[in-house]
Amino acid sequence: MSKVLIIGAGGVGTVVAHKVAKNPVFTEIMLASRTQSKCDQIAAAVGGGRIRTAQVDADDVSQLVALFRSFEPEIVINVALPYQDLTIMEACLECGVNYLDTANYEPKDQAHFEYSWQWAYHDRFREKGLTAILGCGFDPGVSAIFTAYAAKHHFDELHYLDIVDCNAGNHGMAFATNFNPEINIREITQNGRYYENGEWHTTKPLEIHKSLTYPNIGERDSYLLYHEELESLVKNFPTLKRARFWMTFGQEYLTHLRVIQNIGMARIDEVDYNGTKIVPLQFLKAVLPDPKSLGANYHGETSIGCRIRGIKDGKERTYYIYNNCDHEQAFKETGTQAVSYTTGVPAALGAAMYVRGLWKNPGVHNVEEFDPDPFLAELGEQGLPWVEKFDIDLEV
Ligand code: NDP
Image (cartoon, rainbow, N blue to C red; front, side):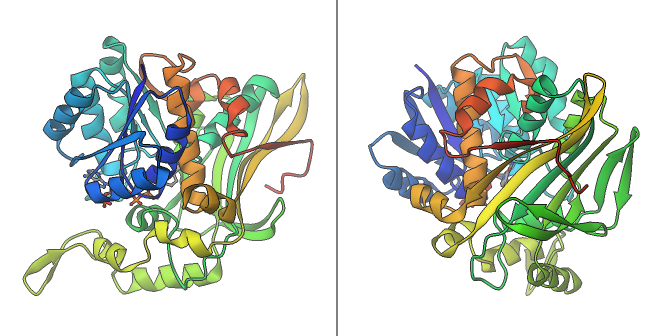
């Protein structure tokens, strides 16, 4: 009996629901979110009568506890927003439920994310014999599992890590974000940050960029961003001398982003509009295309991977491990584009790893702390095949 509760009925929740429903290891499935009708639509699209739905406000621990007590899940897959991580973890502790998410906690009133808030739950999860798996999407998620796999099989010491994330897809819209616009714009408009020689270095937003070549795609301008998995990876792989994260953006996207910032629409504080308090970025989300709606006309591929330099048997070697995911294929299978797909597939697979006893370890852990082998052995057949290249020019 492996009951799973999915919280969040957005693009990622849609993919998780499809994948979990296909996996017989999950005997009962519930999808809950703020708007139950969205859960009902997803359950109907998945079909087969496998998914029950519920309404829950995941900001409210007491509502979560009531839902957990009635459904009694073994694990919760949290694909709501990062704001809900701590309330869901609290409810897990109260009801004896294991936990998995794809994004680290972020307070609503500060565009700032770090693991400390969730790592602080480690002892409480461990004492209750519960496992919390943090950051099990693609990046964070597969990016860290790729790194763990490299460390386990191909290197004695990892020295330089560059996570490279390219979305070469075209959705035909002038401007849209590929996942929740509020979370996405908060992430990209922050200062950049990377780790080198034991210290964190801060850059202005999108200040550092270079052209990188992506498999099957070609050259794309790639921008150095701060990304959450860097924080856990430098802790879990202390031989790393440098760790950076790069993401591609087109000029059209960057121009829109600059205008959004310059006219104040990226603000996350409240402003008074005709006597009503509104947060400009939340209002902007309401008028931008829903990332879920992009799938139908999305063409092209994403390519996300890790470029690593380090030492094996006393010699320096380079290594590149990556996945390319096709937007149209993702849409055909789940009705969502590749960014939701590449996040939802690992989340569903990570939960399966837990219920099959392969990733059980009481406490709060980032994905790279688990054995990467069984996960990567199945990732390809779940829809995200991966490729390895050895001793090549990494460009970074
Ligand atoms: P969406 O905005 O499409 O979906 C979020 C869902 O959460 C919506 O259904 C929303 O409900 C629901 N929700 C929001 N607040 C609450 C609440 N208080 N109680 C219950 N439900 C709530 O986001 P995405 O699907 O694009 O992203 C989901 C998560 O995945 C995010 O945390 C995002 O950061 C993460 N992500 C991770 C990636 C990775 O590779 N690791 C990549 C991409 C995303 P409603 O519909 O009513 O608004």
